Image 1 (cartoon, rainbow, N blue to C red):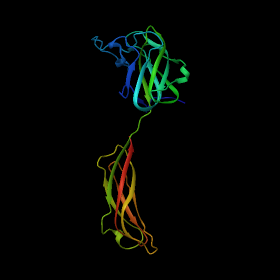
Image 2: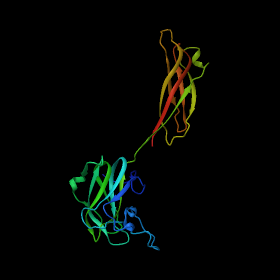
Image 3: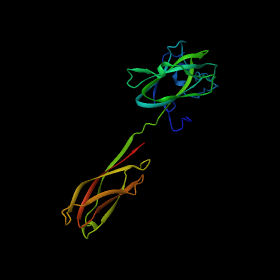
Image 4: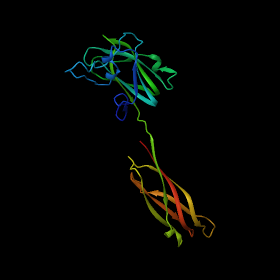
Length: 255
């Protein structure tokens, strides 16, 4: 099965996490420069190195990305230092869901890293990892521990809900006659949604009479739903009479 980062979220380049490292060579070689494909301004020395570069060369070094809320990690990508022949040739991944207990991906087995400065090496996890924090631990390197990197996660969807009330009004077709009768009341959302929402309607006020079988027959349904609004269709049938109906609505999307 082919693997792709299409549709995944780039955690670091979108500034969706906090980054810290075990050591930095100096302030010009910090995690600030670790994003994939980072290049400095060649006309000045103020931009620093084209990578995060550790100050100590041992397997205790790491760069960790921490998120406030859990995320689903799908892949990690590594790249070497863009301005010198320095790159990580193998590494392991550690992660934690609660930031107390840490686990090692594949029991700490080495993952193949880079072979040059700029080729991006992407590793897709065997199964997605659920974590708040995730760390890259270099195990071997060419010349120096230097890398640019990215973590790919599944999008995090948040519920956006708008609520309101809709009234059938008085003296509608539901007040007389028999059989199927309805009244359509247009509803406009205060804020337009990014996509068509799910609508829930609940009758909270019913002023009606029962039919000849002593049954109250009323309902309300959402119709013609768009990002801007919907039609609330109040209805009765048989020989029930509805004087006035009021419904509460909630409209929700995940975005």
